[in-house]
Length: 242
Image (cartoon, rainbow, N blue to C red; front, side):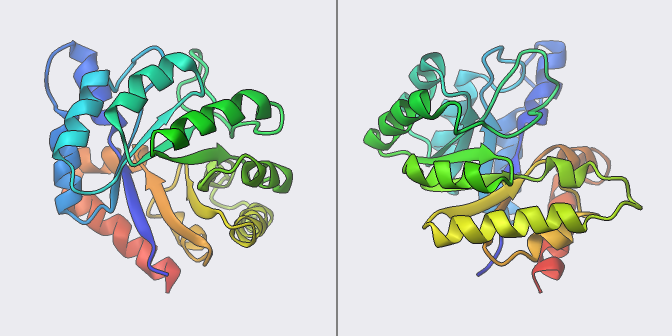
């Protein structure tokens, strides 16, 4: 299975919002990423609108030829903003106004009641649904029970390990979760904190079909340009998968 790359352009919008103006334009970055080989574009519509805005969703949906994946909380306010846009995917994530970035996976077991209704609403609108979960087998099983299309495994704990730490236990958790999800009929994605330096072992997990990467890629693009940053990341992914 070829490994796909979903590029998260949230932090292009973060830069725009820092001055409250109109530049840089996230849709332009998304089109550049698409042209450089990205297989999809991801954005997170947060409740506080700290970066991506609703107008960004509408523009991205209009101009992109690759799938648009919108991350959001499982709230009615988010559904009212996202469903009319009709993205290819919605990834339901936990969200806190105090966090700098998503700090963990969704607790699908604790939230199974409201999640079931949200998943039903999205599926009725023709939108595929993914849950961002930690690599915990019980969470994977619950995702399958909720009838979602896919899970995105949180690689944050793995990515935050010190360079000299033993990554074996975290990689084992990711491999076992990916294997179980695939057996249960779920598509398997992964992401959070991945870089060209650490992406190889995750890319090597055969059940994972897409990686969603944003912060490190946009940070690298500031220095070398988006096309080169994506090329470097795709090369590291290909090496890991091989």
